[in-house]
Structures are given as structure tokens and as C-alpha cells.
Amino acid sequence: MTVYIDPPDWPGHGRMWSHLVSDVSFDELHAFARRLGVPARAFERDHYDIPSHRYEDAVREGAVRVRSREVVRVLHASGLRRPKGRPEGRGPGSAA
Image 1 (cartoon, rainbow, N blue to C red):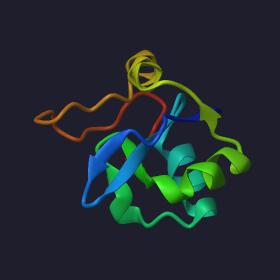
Image 2 (cartoon, one colour):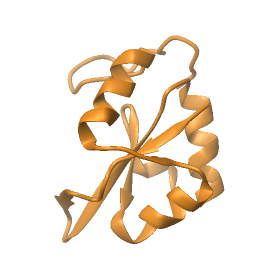
Image 3 (cartoon, one colour):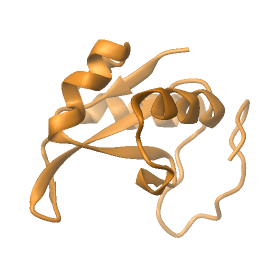
């Protein structure tokens, strides 16, 4: 399993955010997020929103730095992409 994180380039709620994704399953992504102490409410459809001050923590834990474009490519290739408006069913090899 590999977990990927993009730069904290996404504004929202007065701060900047990164996206944390898995290339294998949501189970593994959730386990990684738990190790970081990321609250479950930070999970949105197919990724975790990670505030900029936690970016380096995620990298130290093993997340691979990639560009935002690569995060989307990883999600599509893994079958885990859940665009807005699509039901939150289970992706291949994953549990919601």
C-alpha cells in the first residue's frame, strides 16, 4: 500500500489543505489516518482533508509527496474515485 499527499494548496475555512489518498483501499487509508490522529470527519468521499500544519506529519509517517494531478490519477487508477453526486458504494478492494 502507498498513501499519497498533495501540497497544501487548497483554501478553506481560513487555512490551506492537502488531500490524503490510498492507491489500494479505504481500509488502509483509514488506518493511516488513525495513526496520524486525523479525525474521521476529515474523510470526504475518497480522501482525507489534511490541514497544512499536519502535512509534514503525514510525510514523516510515510505518505508520498505528489502533485494534486497525481492524487486524482491515483484515485482513478485504483478505482477509489468518488466524484460528488456519485453514491458512496464500495470501490474494488476496499471498504467504506
